Image (cartoon, rainbow, N blue to C red; front, top):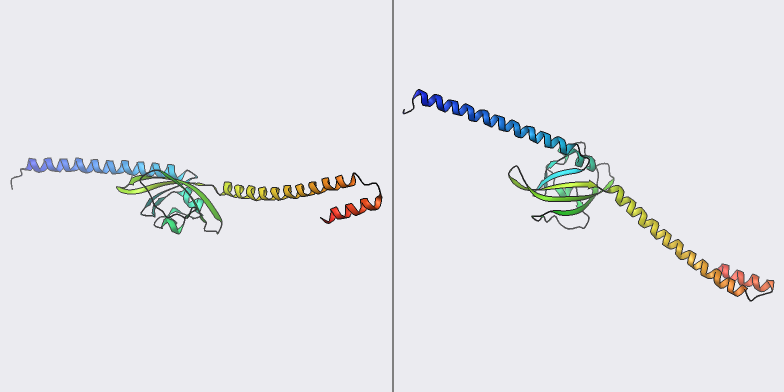
Length: 193
């Protein structure tokens, strides 16, 4: 062998330094990942990472929105098994920022609506999509309620217009009449309309 004991000691020392540096870097990376995960889990909005239409990360906010007890019930599932695009388009991801709306059904059977924003990211060395979800169920339900109330108001206004027109016609007919039997007859005809 052409290695002296000093060479071997030097290689062992370098090996210990490299090993120590790798452990320190892994610990720093793990600490940062835990910090970021803690931040993501503290938000009420949902966050996920998607690769090939499969959830590979989901935060607690998304689990709460969808009605799951834990994120483990989401990770590994296909996006389309949980979420439906409200515009019924397929999941065609581009290489840029995008917005979409989803709807679906929670575990308890209740409906939900989500607005989402997504963008491409590299996650653990892989091309993925980062998506942020905002639960807009309450707003959508309020919009639907308002739309239904608007329809009812329009119906009432139309009925009011018809009644008002009939009353104007009735009043104009009564303006020229002086005897009671004719007034009664005109009034009966108006009420029948």
